[in-house]
Length: 177
Image (cartoon, rainbow, N blue to C red; front, side, top):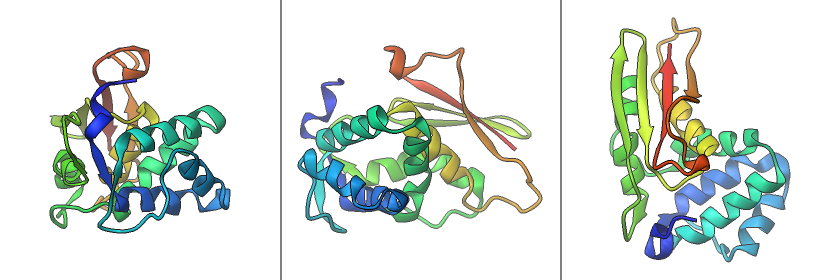
């Protein structure tokens, strides 16, 4: 595990988003969080990120990648955001700022946004979160303000780029619309 999370904290709003996105699991999400010392969850409170990452590791080990993706996809609904984004490109460009507003206490990495074509963008993430969680975050933010005429909006993990799951320093996500 990355040594960076030792003193880093995450806002309760992020954990509340996890609970909201795992309602179908009943109380299992609360039990998993509780096993890792995350209890009495509330808005405006701060929790050790190392504990949340351990809980997400348990979600990853005992459930499917879809669970982590779904959790990440809903983060934008509860997390503290810097502004209301005008369109999906602003939302994608704003992920890094939102990420930093919801964490404190150390180096948490970044989400670097780059528009790469008329209907494509790339985000390179050095965040501390699992790959599928990150892909969900990227796809969820991309959906904010998405024009109705975009029938397809995808976020995919680049299998040719470095991957944190495989020991790389970053993961790359392509967004196509």
